[in-house]
Image (tube, rainbow, N blue to C red; front, side):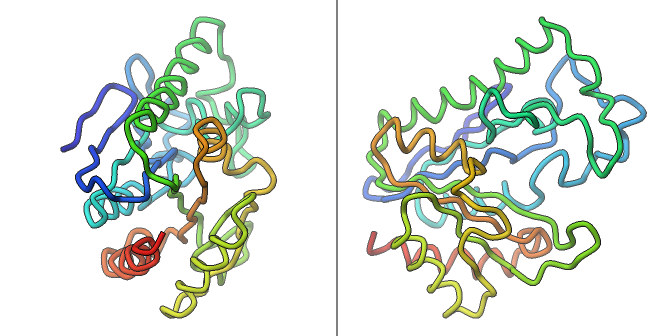
Length: 239
């Protein structure tokens, strides 16, 4: 069963023994009322600057396969990034591809408070889910661009971690065995605050934490998503 509020989508856990709960911080490019993309930001619609393409589909499909609970955002990361600390310099992104983000050029106190209420609602939903879900692992699902600053990325999957070295290595090995070009802490590292959301909640609730990064062309391909889900289901069966 799926439920949605203005800022959060919740998928209820169906399998009592599922050892994983899922989060997706950049699931949507939606701008809740009263926000609109300024004309100068029209080029951002549908891009990775607004959300993680394919990540929501992968999260929903994986939740269905595992019977896992899941929490997904329903607001664009351009409004506020729930995978950044409240003091992060890119919490409200000012520049994208060297161009100013008009949406964030001037943010008044009331608007800032409204944006924080979105992120706070998302994190509160994760906290609430963890009070009732005994899952051992929180897995955050994201996607990344196939080309970065003009250079194609050969990596297909990244398993991000901070403290869970053994678990991350095991999952990376499972992906490699399945034919994926999978690396640890690539294209970003979980050791530098870039898996803020899942790490924050894992520490608060005494759980384990990993983040999965999937290249966007693969995350948007249903056939590849099915392969990824197969690997994850097998890997988590013995968690």
